[in-house]
Length: 119
Image (tube, rainbow, N blue to C red; front, top):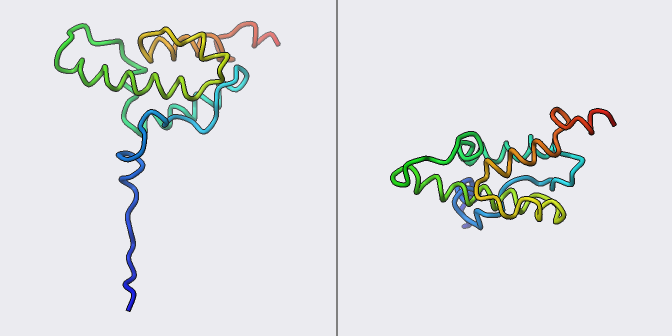
């Protein structure tokens, strides 16, 4: 007799697989910042890493810094994997996800980009 098993895979999404491939199902192409940033932040918040984008790097390089550094590198990899290649080259040498995020917002957001508002 076959048993009816219900397997819970909810833990696999957060703990299994490659954590560097999370982010958005949409790649930023330069014209879709508003939707891309919304979807991307849903993933970042869902993985409890929004502090990396919202807060500056800890001044003290111990304790909280170790966790921040790991989270920062994970979120930077998510950003790099979720933008088109022509955008990747403009952010590749940033050292924090916050700086990447701020640059992308300033460059591609319709709210802050005067040239896009005028178009």
